[in-house]
Amino acid sequence: MHAELQLDNQICFRLYTAARLITQAYTPLLNTLGITYPQYLVLMVLWEKDNQPVNDIAHRLMLETNTVTPLLQRMEKLGIVNRKKGEQDKRQQIVSLTPKGKKLEEEAFAQIPAGMNEQLSACPLKLEDYQHLAQDLDAIIETLKK
Amino acid sequence: MHAELQLDNQICFRLYTAARLITQAYTPLLNTLGITYPQYLVLMVLWEKDNQPVNDIAHRLMLETNTVTPLLQRMEKLGIVNRKKGEQDKRQQIVSLTPKGKKLEEEAFAQIPAGMNEQLSACPLKLEDYQHLAQDLDAIIETLKK
DNA sequence: TTTGAATAAATCGCTTGCGATATAAAATAT
DNA sequence: ATATTTTATATCGCAAGCGATTTATTCAAA
Image 1: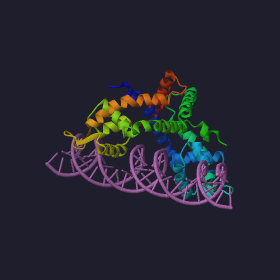
Image 2: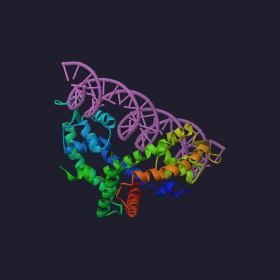
Image 3: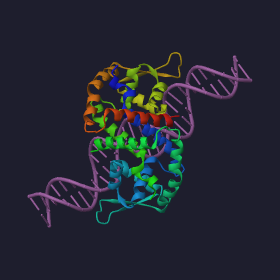
Image 4: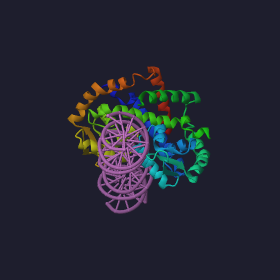
């Protein structure tokens, strides 16, 4: 019985589980938009700034390009982004929103935040708890990112 | 510009990223044991209580059996667990540790906690921050689990 | 007891995530 | 200018994770 090896003592298991469950909470909301959670993340990056190369999107999401490239290919097939070769640097693929991808921002704004608030309404955490949580998670992320 | 749709305002993105990065931090440590992080979770469940049916393991980890069954099949192939049909209830598969699976507990105890502490040594969070973090994550998990 | 409903696992198909490698273009060095 | 190295993406293979369905067994009801 090593206390260090017990599931209940693992912050990592809690992170792993909370991340899965909150992604699952997004899923029915995102299904009505026809996208997945990682695709939603990519859209948030592009809604903030359109026309970005794959690398910038990957860095923003702290993912590798071997994750992001296939994700973008699927999103292109869905008709929500376009990819075109960079003009100055032909190695780059510049990713941009299609009209459909831009339109999704309004639909998301109308549905996602309210839908998540509703699902978390029973959660006892207060605004300051969420702020504190965000700070702690940022500290962990900052420590572990390369 | 909808502030609600900005990545920096998303607690979910932080959870998603922190969970990925901390799993990545485990990876080199677990590689020396020849296992993955989800496999390590299963082992922690079995180290606490051996001989459990698939369903109990899945419930403990808050995963579905369609995730756990293939995971256990891979672990069986690695020679760290055995599966045998339940005697009272023949629908069940009772999962047990092999000698190799039991031995991994000592190796894990010798390497994993210290290795993770080292990687998180630069993290500014104090013990009480981790405790607070654990509480907040438990609140989210409790709210979202079905 | 026989039938119908619930339960335990397993299987299938698809998206992610990531280590390893490949390919092409740009930047640097000689 | 040519060779070398770096950089940007893409490709491949495998482990998860999960919705949907299937199969076998048990439980409950008629």
